Length: 313
Image (cartoon, rainbow, N blue to C red; front, side, top):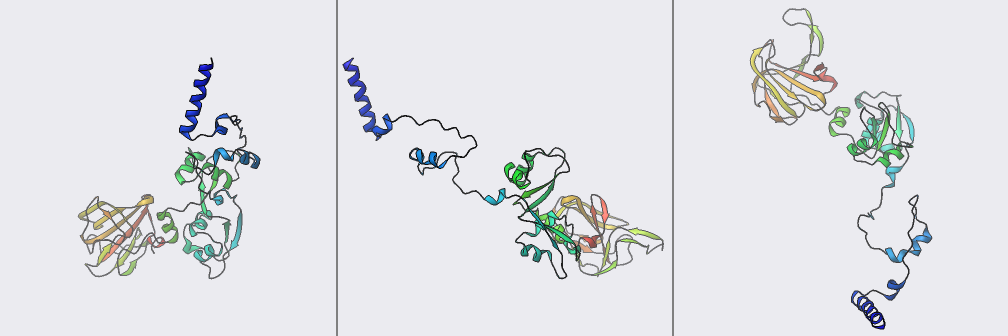
């Protein structure tokens, strides 16, 4: 037995010397298990066990600071639009992004804001979101690049239960570029140079004189005048056979939009080609059922013709 005890003591001495481990560490009692409960550790406990933690970076533990603003509860004020106000000035006044005010007030076109209209002003940047069937708080958080806790706090929710039609505020996110440009009236540009020769809507047919619906905007100019894409997209159809529209091009765009460019003299693109906004796609002409050189320009939203003047910048 004395021999075994001596060997055991020698082994401990060897391990201490080879690992620079202190006697206090080897023979001090093991720290008790701390039940965190609410997740809050008291200052006394932190001091008591600071020697075991120190300033080292522990695996899986982030020491980065957390942006506390994402957990700020939403509060909403009001502002009445005054003569001369612009949305950018109002946003600057309250320290917000324009897309926050656009989304929160569901502004479809900032150019049509009316004097005297009351805007709802949140106390932080973010977007309004209407819950859809199949949504969960987790899926919304993932899609919008935020956290469930941030959504719970911003909307003062007690749990993650949500229902279709419910409005949520998603903090610290921005509008998609397409949606923002659409609301600012900057998504579409004029597709050519010239003068407006016939508007969208009902008119007297230039050939029969009968009242008929005109599903586009006519812009007249000399034959060969360049025609360019009003908005970026992909060419889905080119018609070279001379029918009512003559030679025409159809381009498909985001958010269910399509544009049609008719009575062209020539093309400079092909089907399947991606076109940038402002890129020349053809030349103005007088093909098809036409009374002179012009461009017939149509905008379709979900295959329904809409007035181009409501979108052009």
